[in-house]
Amino acid sequence: MPALLQIARRPGGGFALFAVTVICLVAIAAPLIAPYGPNAIAPAKRLMDPSFQHLLGTDHLGRDILSRLIYGSRVALGVALSVIAISLIAGVTLGIAAALSPRAVDFSIVGIFDIVTAFPSMILALALVAVLGPGLGNVVLLVSIVFIPHFGRVARAQTVALRNSPFIEAERVLGAERWRVILHHVTPNIIGPIFVLACMDIPVVITIEAGLSFLGLGVRPPLASWGSLLNDGYTYLEQSIWLATFSGLALILATLGFALLGEAMRDTLDPKLRKHL
Amino acid sequence: MRGAPLRIHLAFKLATALLAVAGSVVILMALTRLIPGDPATVILGSRATPEAVAALNARIGLDRPVGEHVLVFFAHLLSGDLGEDVFNGRPVAGLVAAALPNTVALAFSAMLSAILFGVPLALLSARNPGGKTDRVVAFLSVGFISTPSFVVAVFLLMTFSVTLRWFPVLGAGEAGAVGDQLWHLVLPTAALAVGWIGYIARLLRSSLLEVLGENHIRTLRAYGVSEAKILMKYALKPAILPTIAILAMGFGELLGGAVFVEVIFNRPGLGSLIYDAIRTRNYPVVQGGVFITVLLYVLTNLSADLTQTLLDPRERSRLAAARGT
Image (cartoon, rainbow over all chains, first blue to last red; front, side):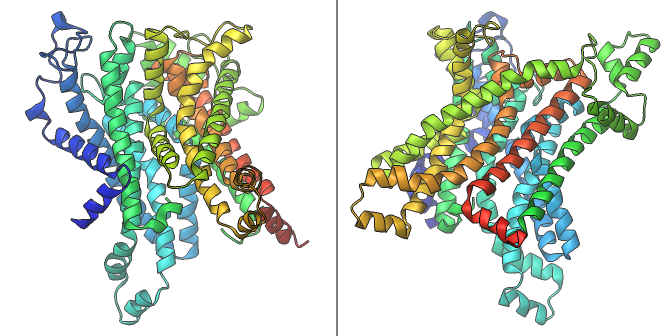
């Protein structure tokens, strides 16, 4: 796997691969490695300091912080990956469609992208979640909409650069159908930068989900998200600093890990992208 | 859009901006209708009398069709009326006007400190690209950019207010006492500025390196001008243009990002106004607050566009060319 080795050699790349691997493994193996149930309440043991029994201490309901953080990784990764998958597929489809359609269609799609990006996304997501009601489903839906233009713009620009290249014209002359040109020739050629963009967007989505959950607009209790854990920790900061500390560190590890991985990937795959992404 | 006359370009930007503002209102109002059950019942509770519910619906405008509701909102807006607080009947415009200065002060001081720390970091790392300082700054920048502002805010609060007790925990300080207000501003500013420090350091570094590779810099070096003078006097000026544009846009973003910082430090402001209104389902306040925030965001972005055009001689000459002069 030469690509992975190259990524590991970039500054911060080794750390990035390590952090991302650990988080993914933890999310997958959560039920196996969590020492307690994430929602097991023990009122007698509330706000305990770290000990051998509870490695990272307990929260205000006596729940084991480590176990809740472990399960929190599932929410963070689950939301991030679903948002990225939805907005990537929708964005790339719209972007390619815009580039290969008549001007009027192209213009309207780009116009819609412009309007969506003209919104302050955080405030709007906040207001919309407020109206629709809290819940992970709504968060995924709304944040996906915000990210569609992100992928759409890059896909469109790439396709525009590609659409008149000789090999695409040759395909057309040979009588290849439109969908065949798109699926077999356009998509594989534009997908590299889009994957890099996807990786760089993961920390942003994790931040938005955690932020909404911090404000009580994301996950519903007792489900643990790093954001809602940070809020619990913030609420009881005067009594115990452990929950706030560890959930904040988990968030930093995840966002920093994915951000560094995205950059290492960008530099490895195509140094020319540095300017554009 | 490249090569299109600038006036048309700006007209498009303006049209998009207005559409976005109007769109946000329409979306908010339309979605309010989708709430399961009746918003007025949700606000008043299930034991409210039908008369009270009907009266509240009429006051918020929910007894009208959504199109009419939106039109009424804009009609009232022309006379500076953003609606009324559901609970105490106070005008939303007044609430927003009272909250706004706090948020603007916070965003300004965050931007200022971001420049104050970000620019020197960029200069330090551009002085010797690939060197030790450069690598440290690069790592710091990524760390600063990727750490969520609410994590920074909670950590700052935990360290300096709760543990060390150097700074006040909550609030914006006593009205009128400037020193006290500034003191209350320090930690929130730091929380909001950290990401932007990293961002500026990084952006300015790369445009500095680009400028430093140009011919006129080589000529200056050949004339024996000192590296420090080249960096500070000749490279910084052209290199800082794109950064200024990003900063102007960032200001709008800061207004939105202020929600967390305001909630965490319990500061009065636009963000905490909207947040509290969301929690109490005070829809007119949510609509008014979000409307003003979107408006400010869109306007700052628009002026960022204009600033860049006016500051960059190349863009100016394109403008002149488009005019046919």
